[in-house]
Image 1: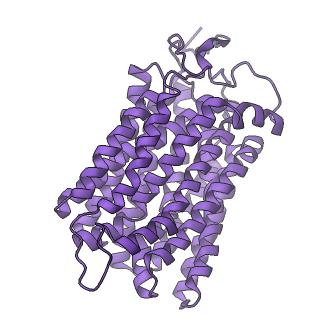
Image 2: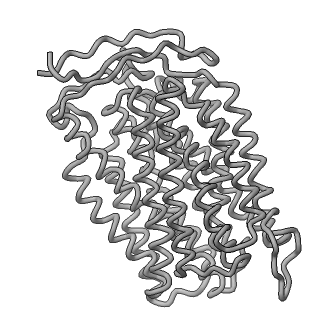
Image 3: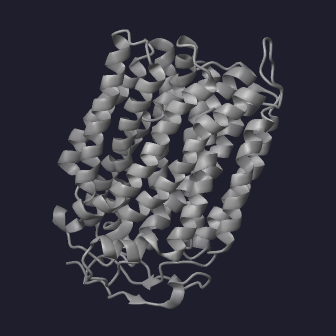
Length: 469
């Protein structure tokens, strides 16, 4: 029989600049752990297929640009439209997710992603070739609206299944699963592009998400009690709080929470760096190092994004829970510094192999921060009741910044080239310092922001399910 969890007692650690006492160990019985795996594992795979149906555009946009005679800035307009739609949508859909639950949110999002990728693929299959920028901007934006339900659903569901003491390491494990989405989008996407008609890069992800929709419908549940287990005190910002979840509650507990607001500023920086790398690394490899999508080295570069994301997520989670008493900002600070070093090395890479390896290393530091802040910290400070709102706010701010990498960074690269030499016939760049030099200041700013909340924790001490009473 499960033991009753201890009642949470607040301390002063939730204030900025003060570390709380160690959080008590968490114990769950075996049946609960098995059912929890059956909940989060399908959810993680679903979000991975979301990435496959989102970053497929990153892989194909160079091909589309050449095919339809569109430059980086014009293709960047499509990306910006999608990023800003996502950014605004996830902010507004976060409170909706907190009110209707993560399960309904992920199912709605999956259905929309399936439909939009299917429509895009069918249109190109039937020869669509006019007003590509306007049409793709609208369709990609609609896709990104439904994509916005993904992250907040993941965070909302798992906030009820994981104690705050478990979330750092679990966030790393779950981030590793999400990183599989980059592999599906980039490595598998490059393979699809090389072996099938190019529009299949929209149709195949549509089918993958459709399969996960059915799996989630059968397996995913919002709370342990919905799956036949007892709910427990998760020790986060919602512990001991019986206030109904309404707009006033979310405004007070999330949108004006000083730590959440500070993390949002850091995630703005993360968004610019993350999408600034992902949106252009395919063209960087092709134009600077002559590595084409579908080649063996491109496959390894895409795999490096995945492996880097996995390593970053796991390392961030382990460091946070085991060396910093479940504090997230110190680890994020260290990884922001890692971004600066890795990106400068990437900009100076002289060989295709070095460039491919450094893309993965950069992603380790970038995705580690992203998972730690948008995933784990949003659960901690938003709490079980406001987790989707906090995740939506953080993810939304990130994608507002990401939108600047579309037309903004696209215009910079079109005008100044990769190394400061304006592109011209026969142009052969020797570095990518313009590209990474635009990204690095945001990594530095993110590190400085983390210093302001170095000791912030949700400040709860409790236990979870007991093995036996």
